[in-house]
Amino acid sequence: MKNKYADFFVRLGAYSVLVFIAYAIFLHDTTHIYNNQKFSEYSLTEFYQEVLFFLASAVFFIAAARFEDSRPISILVGGFTLVCFCREFDYLTDFIDSSFWGVTSGIVILTVFSLSWKRRSNLTKSYYEYYNSKAFAYMMSGILVTFLFSRLFGKGDLWKALMEENYIRSAKNAAEEGVEVMGDILILISSVEYLLFKIKQKRESKIS
Image (tube, rainbow, N blue to C red; front, top):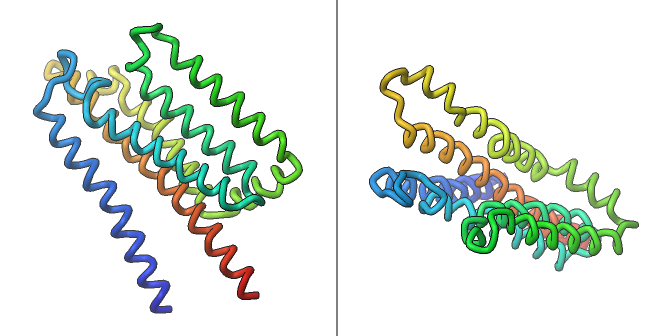
């Protein structure tokens, strides 16, 4: 029981660090202008989102490398977060073409589907294992926050109606990016929780 309490506070502390880092970066960006506006794609907030997606992808790929039984779903979800990273990082490839991120994303998608197809016999089993873990709940929450709620919450019409003649675009951008970062943190937490779940599962199997 004590170990469970300790585990809870360790997780709470570690995940809180991600939130405090987000706040510190957010506070920095409130006083800095990038590309003639606050909270643009060149801001530290945007860079932090890219880091979160990259880390989530790396953790899922680590799970794929370490645990063969979960490899198909780990590769697929890791590929999903890597595509998100490519999309967020598109401003670095805009000098080639504004849609070049689609090329890199396409390469990632083809690669992960190819790798998963080779291990398709374990795909259904690994999917249901992930689906029944709390990591899946974190992932669904993160996807809803990042890709749905943040977009709706950042709609210009909403903020213009709220602020009326005092409408400030940077305030709207800040709100949208802040919500999006929280969703990205949940996605990273999902990857960590899944890796911890697999480590615990393997340890228990050795004991039994």
